[in-house]
Image (spheres, rainbow, N blue to C red):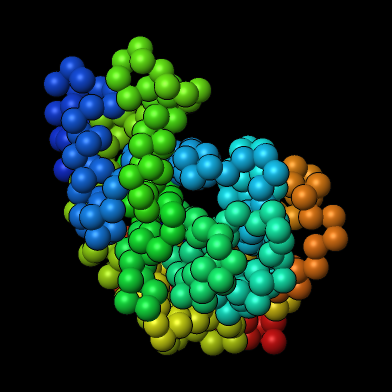
Length: 365
């Protein structure tokens, strides 16, 4: 009998368990030397040596990054609506206003032309999301930012190791954030990494994550407790070693699916981009939710609908977008369906996914 194929499957091995046990034996569990080592290794592996600040979640990374970059009341930051709410939430939590722009229909990332339309005298930043592991059009967005004198802030939560125009994501903006949630391409159990474009942002982020102090009891500003523990960093360090192999397996799995799937729209990869396939997202033009239910119930294959309600339509965020007209976002929200692509898939799993999707697509044609 076939086993259920989940949409995502975190991989935790003996190396991670041994690393956590070593921290427990050390007696130093809170933020300490293991976090510092993880920051350095993450920087060297993925960010060309940029300063990295580890925090306790990806959302904290966005929030603290924005505060560290000086974003606050009266400012506007342009964001996509087709993403997880944490992107816009982090802007709103600073007291600034998230301004929603439309996405490119093929990559699901910020459309530079739409961003251009949303600029105002209050715009202080543009925050692209490298959604599903495909980089946003950073060269075009950076050109707009330079012309307008505003900053780029990267939400790289789903894009560990992705590249655009020969450059790693996370190295373009004044800051970038990587999530380490369990379903991401690598995990620390929970956590986030802030890639900092200058020493000022890095120092501010370190102050903000630690109650506003660099030295104990010498609080310089009002801050948070957003520290990463050495336990989480120990997991992250081991996962970082495995990330290149896992990303290559994701690309291989995606290539197999794209070659064999019929009757659905498969993901596009831009010629100048390196996609890391956090998600493998197809388009189902009619009854996407029924398609997903049939995959699960008839074929024992999980899938994910990310994101069925665009941010600008959420009760918590629609106050910021009363007149938003985002047609590509609205269409993607009703059609996008993410299939399993994680590294633990077997060849038989991939064949089962192809058979199921092709059968359902043909039946619905």
